[in-house]
Every structure is written in structure tokens, then in C-alpha cells.
Image 1 (cartoon, one colour):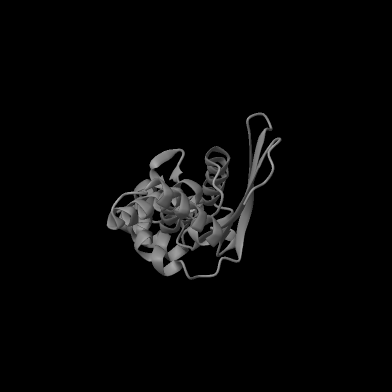
Image 2: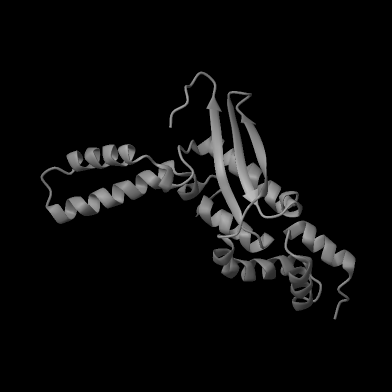
Length: 200
């Protein structure tokens, strides 16, 4: 059995952002193997991610990403519970990936709750027009399907992650919560493209 030293616990804390006791337990369960301990923390953390989503995120960071030789710029604000975690490599990587994703994928809103009702109504009207002549129950299915696609293309948390399309941004956030053991809240973003006006 490998000795679980304070230095080992500290290293795991810095890599994962998880609490000291959680790090000790994970290292004990994996005989001091840092990489396996991170996996262990993630496994337990995913189950706890749902519980953590109600916790206050008073710390965090604003990250920036500039792309295409200064033609596209993005700012993202992401909240976490503690300053310690906001300085962890995992959190920094997430905020940077998020800013890069926004530059590439051009979302319009963070979540579907932010989409104005007028925009949803306009989309529904367009889809209904396209489905004219089809049976009522079929129209309803078409409307639902097209609206879901609209949300997945335009809402940041539902978009497929540009670096790993098998994950959407919400799953990426949940994975991070599993690793760091704290709630993570994607608060807002701004995307600027040279010569383009902002639209909401």
C-alpha cells in the first residue's frame, strides 16, 4: 500500500480542484495512483453534480479568446464556489475551451430559457408554414423536432462541443463538476466579430 503523503494529496487537489478529504479517499482507493484517483473523483462527482447545481457560485473567472488574427473575440464568465477551484488547471481549461467554442460555434444564448418568446413563436410559425398540408399530429412532431434542433444549434449549453462533438457543453460542465466537486455556472458570454453588429 503506497503511503498517501500530504504532497500527493496537494498534487491531486491542484489537478482536480476537489476537497482535501475527497482527495485522500480517492488516493487511498487507488493506492496512490494520481490518474486513477482523478477518475475515481469523477465517478463519485458525477452522481453529486445534480446536488451541487443549487449551490452558490460567488467565485469564478472571466476568460478571453481571440481568433482569426484578431477578427473574432470572445469573453466568457463562469462561476464556481471557491477561489481555490477558480485557479485550478481543470477550471482554467474549461473556461478557455468554452471561450474557444463560442468563437467557433456562434451561440446566441446560454440556455433555452434565455430565448425570447417572440423568437420561439417566429420559429414555430416558420416550421408550421413549412409543414402545411400534413396531418395535425405530424405537424406537432415536426414542430417539436425542429424547435429542439434550433435550441441545440443556438443555445450554448446544448451545442455539441467543437473539440468533442460526442459531448454537449452541458455534459462538459457536468463532467467538470464531477472532477472539481463544486457547482459550475456558465453565466454569460459576448462574441465580437469584426464588422458585424451584435444581435440577441
